[in-house]
Image 1 (tube, one colour):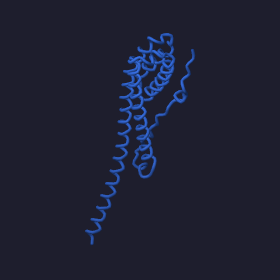
Image 2 (cartoon, helix red, strand yellow):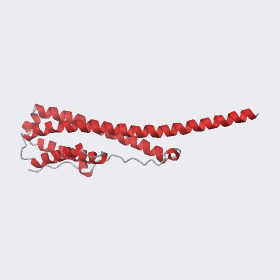
Image 3 (spheres, helix red, strand yellow):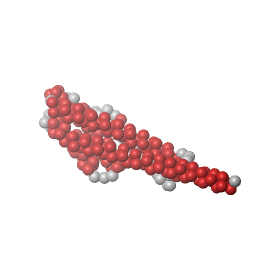
Image 4 (cartoon, one colour):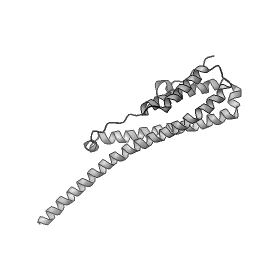
Length: 182
């Protein structure tokens, strides 16, 4: 009889330890998923970063008087080089707004819209923008899972003081259509 109680206690402790390890590992996996999701965003931002100068040079020939747009794009690109996650996302959002204005200006130049280089760069940029949007969506989904895990029972018991991650949100200026004035 004494052995059955001892075996029962060991089994209960084993089950509890397995449960604890499972919850702890899930929190770690979710935290790692957030880092991987950010890395994917970073890769796509770098692709966009590399493509933008070619696109800008193509448009410059047609719209040389649009200096303000080109300077905005250059400033946003410069912001992408340095800084942490927050600064890079701000620069990315600024670049998105500047590119929107660039494409709005391009609409005023029929020859530019028909140029093969412009079409190619625009298609490549559109593909990258779609990948960035998907990567941001995946990041936000990963953040949601992580935040839910560390703020609900039983995860909150094992979170060990981990802070919630912030979601990536579109800036206010990205929610408005670009205005082109001549």
